[in-house]
Length: 309
Image (cartoon, helix red, strand yellow):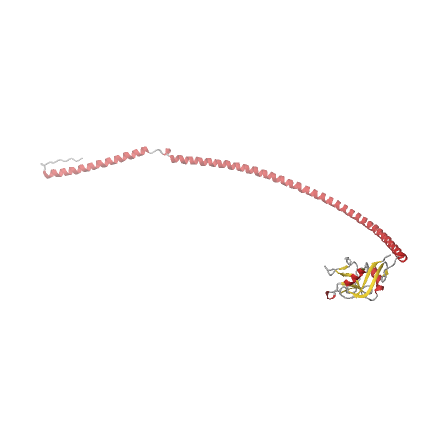
């Protein structure tokens, strides 16, 4: 608020007083305005303080308290769960200990049973071996006795057969001399067969064919006894016999009737298949009188046939 007092009467002094008063009034006004602002600020600050909630009613405190309670509950739950796990683990451990004890006991029983079984098996095997040994001894003894008896029987049968054979030969010879023509003309009776000795030279195959035309066969030797019986008539001459190499295997020898060679009377170093061309057999004089020779050579031959009545 500004108060102005004009005094014309007082002149310049009055004017100065008026200005001083005016300045003083301005200062007072400024102080009033300042005080008013301070008062208003104090009122606002007071109002703000009255509106702030008390510290114990702050929501952040409740959150902290809630979290602490939850942590305590979780700790209690974990403690209870850990206790339960420990109890469960202890029960499992006890059960495992019981099972291990039972397993050890079972293993012990099995070992005892196995030992007993092995002992029983050993005893049984020992008995069986003893029985087998006795049976083997008895069988061996029985076999020896049987073999001895069989040998004796076979020897007796051989003697009987030999006697019968000799008797039959005697009867045949007697009958031949008494009632049969011994052999055809040109044939020789040796033992119980007729033989034809031809000195004219022919090949092996040609000799076989000629013997067949004479109602005989090229000589097929039955055994060494027959060969020995022919040696005096053979002398020092050479004759084809009915023996030649197998076409499928030249190391095998076959008679003209297809039978294999069952005895050998080869000369020393024979058969040697010289020049790989000696595939037929000839007979010479002497006990070792067989020799291999080229089938195309021309030598004598011997035919054989049974005697006729």
